[in-house]
Image 1 (cartoon, rainbow, N blue to C red):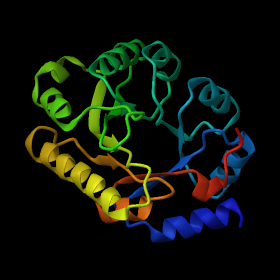
Image 2: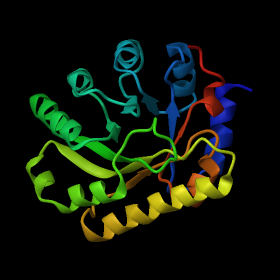
Image 3: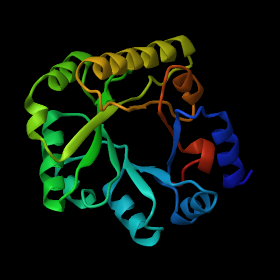
Length: 219
């Protein structure tokens, strides 16, 4: 099946409130161009160097989202053009993004990454730490980042009930923060190729799909 056909099928499943982020990491620029030609404009990458190379050769109206673990010393390379950073997993990283965004004269939308999966390899805030940061006045001094929501990854499991519980807990926290401290909260980024249907049912506003669109990755 062609990439265009896959995109069409996936988008036909999505409610109006959910956007599709095509995860293009480890896929060549030609396949991204194919998805672009089929109307896709949002793409997600997780390696700074790979992203930089793709930005140089692909259409300039693509909205690039950074979804991988971001090292503080790499922020400066993506700050001039990144549309959103999903994977802000420490307050220090948020401060560095703010500093680099200021140098570029722009405000960068960010999501706090929340660790809900039952795996130590995942990064992110726990709910209490994220809540404390969002309720503090420390964010007020960061004028060049806008925390517009949260991102999370479900556990790698075949247990759909566990996945649903994790996504439901993210949605509950999202709504709590939206109603109490962050009315600008618009985005709940959760759901990947294996679990995006559950994520949609649990209120995801951005699903991050790679394999479902592009097939297996070319490492």
